[in-house]
Image (cartoon, rainbow over the protein chains, first blue to last red):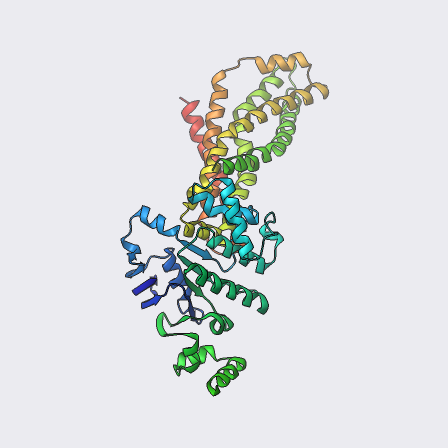
Length: 253
Length: 220
């Protein structure tokens, strides 16, 4: 579980996060949604330790990040898997080398053991034939799956995804969503996803945090988001005809 | 880390052998021809062609001129490869994993460039060889006269001076482009701009350090 307590973050005069408190639960897909500029990415990067909030705390299962020493922070980072928006695969490495990278860096496993684990996670993301390909030789959807494989190879406790569906076709998006959801439940991971994709909200939103102008405007489940009358949420989520009709149909039962 | 260092040696040192060999050989030849064409006074001995070629190549051409060229070749490669990793979030990925990205990316380059004097040694040899071939086969000087010239008043410290400069330039070549790549912000266009700025600053630093080191090592 990740508990965020009253965090604030500014860049110069511009205050991006204005005292956000929330809980991201274990074994659930926690989604952060909101308009561009609402502070989603800054919140995610603060959770990852890339940005340091000016005030407030972030607790990873009781461990307050800002109070950890350098070694403890490094240990905590090995418990984190991250799927970047553009996949962020290392260009010069093959798919298998990319996936095995965290194991080579942070474990003392021998080559055979690393290969066994890499084979296992690549099979888990349905990419067992892509071992020797370079990132540039595979599609965007496959790159995302490799990024997920790399993120989970070291058995993380926390999985962060920054817009995992961006640039993907609807079928591949659904596949990626379901894969993240399955992995979250299978390995009991605390997953936090930053997304714009309303399909993801409807499909895998166990716990949805809606940000507006750097503040928590609403929080609830995918079922609750259909019923909410929060104006900001309704204006953002149901801005398209399709989702308005889906909502009407849901409310009519 | 070992494999990373070997990869950097391959990219930076082995990958530069061809261009260094080509430039050194022909510039050495041009130095010999230019010297020969300017020695119009019959009282000046021809072996000075060999002497001038040796001095120019060892003291300045190989360590300094090649390093400025390498600021373009290696420097752009280092800045653009690290810069592209920054733009495509690969550096963020390393940091999130808990890897010291700066150390992971720059340290192997510094170690690889400890072999840079090897490249400059080859440039010295090929520069003088090019001068010998241009002088002898161009009909400006006999082989024996050229060889006598290259051996005349030889001061071994000049070679040491050249290699001291080379090692300092190697550190500049590894660190300045890495800095510009690592700390760049923006997108693909900024990667190109960072490469250009890195080339300018590396070249300026090499020329300034060349002046300072020459004054310190030879001037006193």
